[in-house]
Length: 83
Image (cartoon, rainbow, N blue to C red; front, side, top):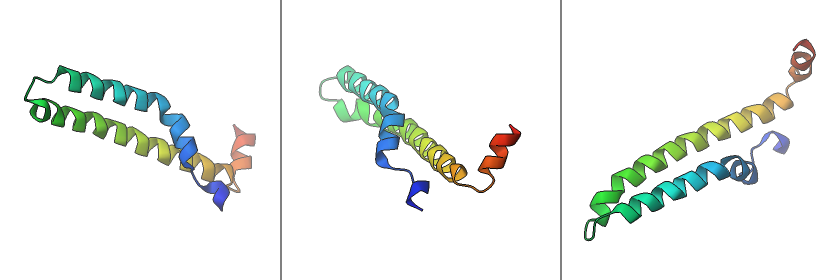
């Protein structure tokens, strides 16, 4: 059953590029904030960037889990033969 699970390392590898983009975007937002207005200038933009990342992470996790489960499905071999 463990073979059908997603591990953190799979997600880390799959999302490395997305995480780098998130970090770059957050850094740009933080660096663009006006003096004395850091929270006001950054909070919503960082939340939005994080929301996009979170959606992509969730979709990637679902896809990986689905792939893992299909690989062990009794009909997986038949689908490969038919394709």
